[in-house]
Length: 263
Image 1 (cartoon, rainbow, N blue to C red):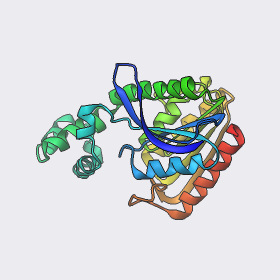
Image 2: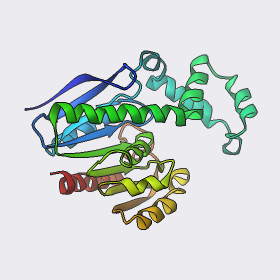
Image 3: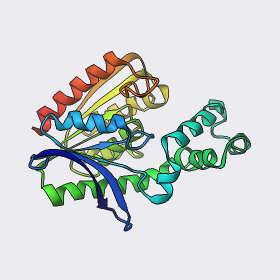
Image 4: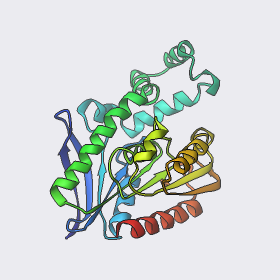
């Protein structure tokens, strides 16, 4: 039966991860959708609904589910923090003293979001990967799908790439996400990857050549599309970088990719 609901699943440290579950509970294929920096947004829920319409069971975890993060990592607080962070010159973003002085102009919430979500992202993502792995286990235990896919956007794009090197996903889609910390992990990928990137996204795109080299070295399958004249987060129709033509084409590629490898 196809339906949607808010659920919670237990994770590794005794906490619960709030999640959006949509689709046919009897489907033999499940997909995990991984959020952008904004959290479990309307965009992520609507994208999950579109995927479920293909015949997939879809789980979208809210990776800010712990009480202190629910209150801190709101979309409003994140937007305010990103505005403050954007005022720091790019050549000063490794200068701790400069950043410390710049953050003094912000509110306590802005400072905390920037510190935890931007400057200490690596530590946070280590935990997020564990939460996502428990989401995989939740689907496996309760619904027993025979095939698994994963897709993520921005921060979640990097997480989808990373977790596909740790768990046996049959298909992985990465929307403008960063490479895994260790490219040797690509050797462990089970299924193919579809990478969708913005043309005007130098920080993310600087990692593409090395990633492609690893796919060649380890003889893993990848499909790649770069959309000229688009910016990071072009697929989010609620965002300022939205590009309808690119987003529509990326959706077609994503849906065909999952149909081919999961259904």
